[in-house]
Image 1 (cartoon, rainbow, N blue to C red):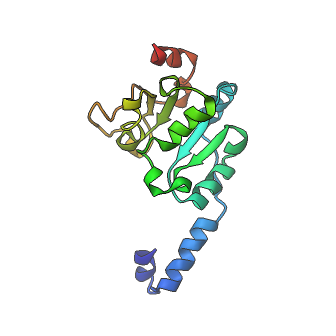
Image 2: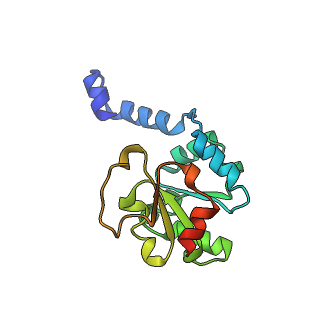
Amino acid sequence: FDRALAELGCPGRGRVRHCVAWYRGHRPRLSLRADARACLRRLGRTPLYVVTDGHKLVQSAKARALGLGRRVREVLITHRFGLRRAKPSPYCFLRVCRAEGTEPGRVVCVGDDPRKDFVALKPLGFKTVRVLRGPYRGLRVPARFEAHARVRSLSALGPRLFARLMG
C-alpha cells in the first residue's frame, strides 16, 4: 500500500492504515474450484481439516467465503497460535493428530508449496501430497522438501492414493 499510494500521489501512514484495515476487513467473494468441491464431497466422511497461514482476520474471511466451516472439521489458522506456529511448524498438524486420537503416519497432508508445506512434516511421519498448480507448480526442490506423491488435481485424492501412501 505504501508504494501504491505514493505512486498515486497520496502517501501517508494514516492512508496506509486505512487501506490495510479495509483489506483485512472486507468480505471476499471466493469460490472453490470444481475439483475442490468434488473432493470435499467425495471425502465427506473422512475427517478433514484446513491448516492455513496468514493474518487471522483475512484467513477467517476467506474460510467463511468458501464455506469451509460446514465442509471440514476445523480451519486452523496458524497465526492464531503465534507467528512461530506458521508453516513449516508442525504445531497445527500435531493438533489435528491429538483431536483425532491418531499418529502422524495416519494423516495425509495436502499442499502446494513444498518449501514450507512438507519439510517439517515428513520427518514426523506424516504422509504428504503436493498439488502441482498455482505459483509453485514448477518449483523444483530437494527431496526432503518434496511430497511423497504429486498430483495435478484434487480429483486424484481418494482411497486408492491414500492406500498407496499408507503402504
